[in-house]
Image (cartoon, rainbow, N blue to C red; front, side, top):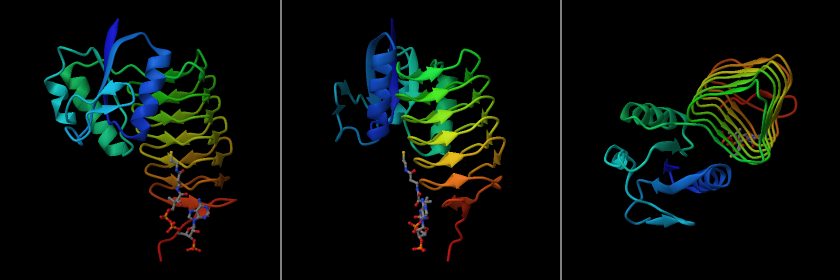
Amino acid sequence: MSELLILGAGGHGKVVAEAARDGGDWRRIAFLDDRHPDLDHVLDWPVLGRCEDAADLRADFTHAAVAIGDAGLRLAWLERLAALGYRLDPIVHPSASISRSARLDAGVVVLAQAAINAGTIVGRGSIVNTGASVDHDCLLGEGVHVCPGARIAGEVRIGDGSWIGIGASVVQCLTIGRGVTVGAGAAVIADVADGLTVVGVPARELRSS
Ligand SMILES: CC(C)(COP(=O)(O)OP(=O)(O)OC[C@H]1O[C@@H](n2cnc3c(N)ncnc32)[C@H](O)[C@@H]1OP(=O)(O)O)[C@@H](O)C(=O)NCCC(=O)NCCS
């Protein structure tokens, strides 16, 4: 049996902890969060300290996960935790469906009712959130977030740090660049360049006024 330390005890952290508890065989689960000591527990689990305390807790925990929404911070913490020697195995809710031919990299989180189909690669620190689906032969970069209920068709490439909003759809064989935001409910039917925000059906660039 192993011990899991989760960095980030916000709403996403709660969901990650429950997925880990339901899908794993942990002797112990605990959080770190920068609101400690004001925040000392969340649901059934203690908050033991601030994120920086991960270095001191290495002897007590075999594994770590990062439940921080900001992709840059999430990836930076994953790197530090790896350097400290934590194992960063993917956290997968037991109701998620993962193809045997899919690959989940370190620090990936896949939540309840999500599906990841044949040949898809999910890069380091990416989140496939509740009820989202990523079809066959997709390539998700690092720190991608596919929000709840989003649908990614086959052979889609999504660049590092991109965010596919809740309930959005992406048709097959497209390339979505790095640092893209796809708005809630959008239907993406053409490639999206790096850094853009797109919204609507069909999705169009949202320009700041
Ligand atoms: C796309 C998004 C990031 C834009 O946020 P923002 O920059 O704060 O934009 P604003 O709310 O100021 O809206 C700007 C304009 O875009 C429109 N707009 C914003 N989001 C939209 C969306 N998803 N679909 C269509 N239009 C949208 C607004 O109506 C507004 O139009 P107006 O200028 O004609 O009034 C945000 O609205 C969104 O969709 N976020 C996704 C949230 C999500 O998926 N959460 C899940 C968390 S797990």
